Image (cartoon, rainbow, N blue to C red; front, side, top):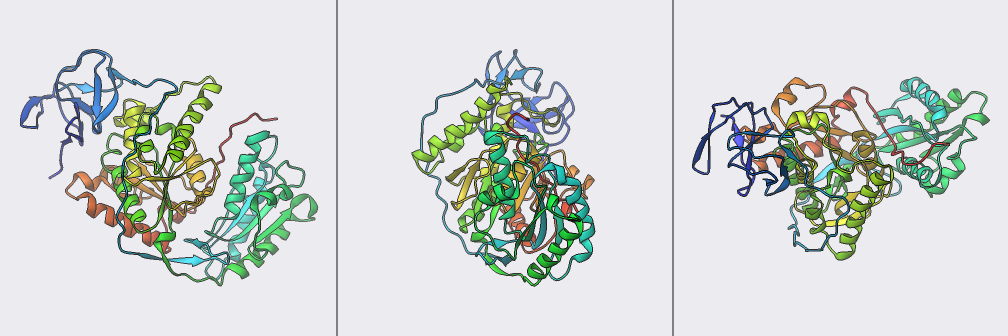
Length: 494
């Protein structure tokens, strides 16, 4: 029998409807019975005791905002009668929490060992334009090159983007760094870097960011220097296919897996089902020596101290403070409201404030200590849990995770989305209705968590699925042939 509502933490002043509840429904929590005074949509909150105006609303055991007016027991609590309590820049104090995880048994996936020693979970040929001017050429090459696939090559994909020229300063450097990160990504068995010739981020500039490379694995083509750039590109792709197509999968320890974690289109169940399951997965992978990366910094606002206090040392704490405040200053520098969140879809799903959203979002981090803090475009170095600077935008953040080294992205959602990223992107639903409705989008269902499945069992099921994906099982967006990428645009355009 499906559970109808849940009080997440004993200190909570609200409960969450796990299915639509009608006015007049009698609920029983902590041996107290009362009647709902109005309809409560799925994922939305109702009040357990009378609340005064300006009283903190407690959910997940923490404040998620304050009431706008007095709210009676059994009433619906949402944006109409509560608001954020967050301010702008804050002062933080390091209160270290010991969250070390015990080691668990080693597991293996079937992956590709690259010549430089890195491990990949896909053997694809990537076409990476240096500048948006050659996007259509890259797409045409991708289409023509499909007939060249052979051996163990699993896809030939282009990654068009609108940048690479008319940018200045750090904005241009960020574009170069993301493109270089993708060139070096081990999921690509071969890479064709397609330039125009006159762009700011031309191939010679990009090589400075790529660093040493295998000339058999990475090829370069300057379109302005070619009589027929498409035919020349196809010739180079044949060479890349010949080189990479003989690669075979072999057992690789999951201690070498890097998994990105992101949510989008969240609803009121995301922080109850999907995100805690991903958090439990993260802890399990880290206990086996693996690595996870959490991003979307604006959706840490309001829950950031939970992450700060799990930092392994004070240096990481200070880096996390800067991570948070730098993003707040980014908003302020563009004269934008820091807390202009959640989105309309989030609100429809039951999320009322940014604190509400952030407390659910950070559930994906599990309980492991923070061992690394990464700037945008910075490759991951430390095993364990890492925090990455990137915005909440789904495609930009997922691309940033891939650029930092994620082999796979776990993407939790309560509303659903078909997008992909440069790496396999596992869509995880927070509710069963979405999973059954959008079977062509959703790969894994966490709605089971309120339907009788326990967290440990669902965590293990997700872990087994990720191992299968790392070993070659395609996710839904891959089956659809989707490969997407987006770069974080932060500066002026010339």
